[in-house]
Image 1 (cartoon, rainbow, N blue to C red):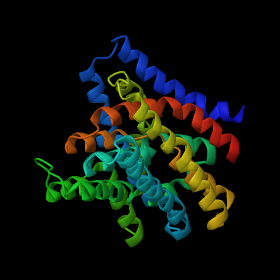
Image 2 (spheres, rainbow, N blue to C red):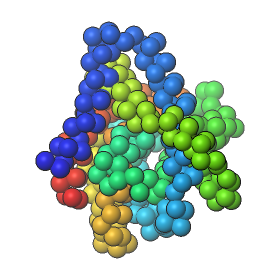
Image 3 (spheres, one colour):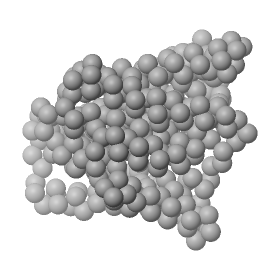
Length: 308
């Protein structure tokens, strides 16, 4: 019943977004407006506010960072080799294998992982979540482009990539909150109250938009590759994080639960955007976004059963 009470409200918001779009109560342009409101305003304010109010001395723990990123990089390497030598039998490109590896390791933490973590562990753990995801996109996206760099990437520029990453609303808001917290920038109580009001729809809007966007994506012909990527992402990666945090780095139970739930999040749509930019594995990653999001209902239930 505890697991149902955590998953059910979140699932309802996702399904609501899916059905209102599927039955055309909301058009694609209207969903785009809600998405812009959520991702350019509510979520950045939510991230800034919680990073600003977080206890930094408790948030940045090198063992927690290691427990999350060592398995992530290990799964990335495993996914790269799996695609290159088993799926493509050595005939593929570095770009294709690196994008597939990204699909095996990149987590949709903000949209799905964070609501589950808050419901299961409480808001006091959000500082640690933001401390971990600050480097998430930068490391995995840079590694993907680096491995693909020796092959022709039409129109790609490291300078443009770096600028896009720096001004990304998620990265920018977390960094701003971290800096303001670290140097002690005073924020008046009334302004905190106003920012809190703006941030309150963030998670509900994020889940609603996620469900709406699922109606625009489809599982393509290469569903087998998407299934393998989803297995890597939802089962193997969280299992390695659990073993690493529990036995190798001896984290406490709450810390282990946090990093496992973060790693158990499905593939984020930003990975598909990287695949589009590299012109490789677009169909596989679009299918993996849909498939892993659907399967995450069962994988989250499993990991919550293990952890709670």
